[in-house]
Length: 121
Length: 107
Image (cartoon, rainbow over all chains, first blue to last red; front, side, top):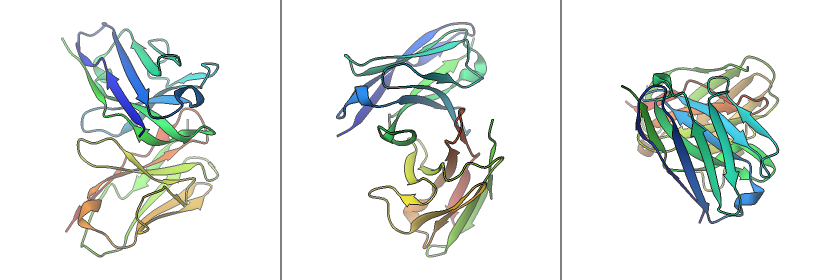
């Protein structure tokens, strides 16, 4: 069974940093592009970042470019999101998302339960 | 960036009704369009991929159609468990973008 379990969320002050993790199991993690998607309270879904299977291709939404860094450790079946210079508008539930097959990076058939990041003083 | 619009933003229908949601892209995205269902407090669930393909395990009352810039999502016979928000998502271009969502309730 495919499982994605996020951790690392919490309350942080504006300008602070957090590192999110996503532990993957039940599939060959090293074969899949992985993604972070977020959802602000009461709002819609926003794609944040994507990393290819071997980390060769990395993409970010303009809203986080230069502040967030996506990475992965295929030996540990883990995906990460280092978030720096956090702003109030980064407050959201952050989901780790896996595409439905190795050839399709962007149709997400498996999602984690989400981890809440709250940025407030 | 490709902008995605959805209409209506919300709807209320009776059990058994046919429900249709439209999604429009700001430029041609071929068939690179997904539909998700999200229930309160839960992660989204993929229902339709590549505009018209039903994800494994998803009831056949859900369907999708369209290509280019105009897409349609249909629930052929609304059920109580279909109360949720539905999102379209394009993956023709990075950044991936989602529509604003359509909330579906039971009348």
